[in-house]
Length: 421
Image (cartoon, helix red, strand yellow):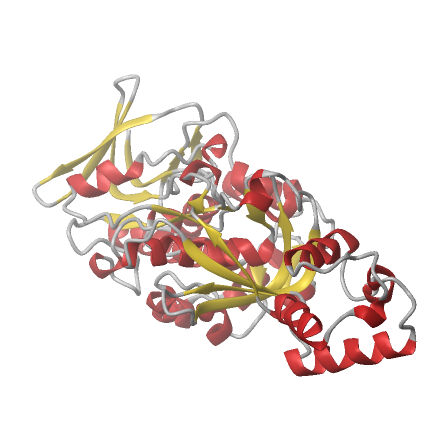
């Protein structure tokens, strides 16, 4: 079977690449090792599929801290607004939610997957499911064929590798593509988990004192060894039995990993501000005022509106304040130290859950070896990469999927053009 383009991997970037190549009139085969295409899409955005983000390009690039700038050229050719148009042309109406996140009006990820599969069919893209690839074959400095695990060889003029990273392995991304990339002469930068819960062996975590407490709209920072913030994120978080999780934590996680590596640390300090809209002095004055109004009330009842009750009790205990004592008995010094812990409760973390538990893989095929306008390999003719196998990673919120769809689009279009030339 002689084809123009083979796309390996049926995730977001692979589906987009196969459709883009098909639209250019290429004979395309999409190969996936699983029995279902679009598995990562189907579970993204909590099963509602956050297909892209409507913030301006500058903002989107900022939200892709892992080599986001590499995508500037790609965005000038096909960007998030084009993704929205693409889905609307397939009959998927989208709506915008908080922080620019775009979802299907149906709230069903499966409707997005189905529309993509229908488009493949319409373009007569051949699909092989349950067909694990054993190897990608190269000859005389260009791609030649794909060899399946059952021994079958399939020749093509262009090959797109879209097999994902190593995170969320239940969707099929188990890191298969790195060896094929290295064989073509590519560098794989060190892999690490990003968008992943953070672990801690602090006594309050080990004793599960705060387990299950959710804190809304807090500011969480990762500190460098001098105590200055490397990064701060303002979102929600939750305490767990192994450490901390939730949106703010996921966004900070890669900076925990990087700090440990950069300074050879076994632990990194994080700082939690549960009242980011008020400074410490304002908070201190506000507490003095509340205490003056009802000095005979217990400290716990006087302050209870400020914080979730279990977290309030924990901070009082940390500052050696008896919650049952009368508010009037609280010294200014203790009040100030309590205000300080509301603004900067510092604790140590010692790493993250493993890569398999991460939402996104950090590291991958070095973008220095990829043409930013075509996603073509600078090392091997006819070879293209897209999606999470590349060393590009963003925060959750539609940024990784935007990167996957944009790089998939360029890889598919250019694989087709080069094959047809």
